[in-house]
Image (cartoon, rainbow, N blue to C red; front, side, top):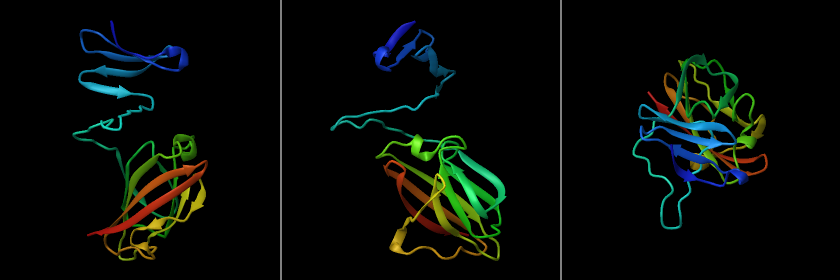
Length: 188
């Protein structure tokens, strides 16, 4: 096995190794967190790619994002786990106005997941029937956040017989401090 990248493991670095068959492994503190087999690369830890002032850190030709499609009606407080999906699509007609609570996962807060200066952008697609409902409140880790709305005016209704797509960009601005930018778009 040949070493491709070697970082100082005594300071928390890792080693990427590879062999003639194209298999890769990331070894850090005795664990394997990166594997490559059959043309697929799996990273089981947070990966940071850093460029320079004149070179971009990452170029991606195409990306597939995880979408959760659920026969659920939007109502009450909805836990949106950003570690499990980039798009959440509720296909059953909403039954009441709803609050979206963004978190990392059921066991990880967004505050823990993100560093100050990082952002995440997600979408929530809500189906409405003849009676329309809308996202009336936003939370991060269970704490209310007043979002900044596209166009400067908070939405006060959903769109009947349509799918409303809510986009959220969440920026961590400090410890347990977030700015949320949001928009609502009707699709029919």
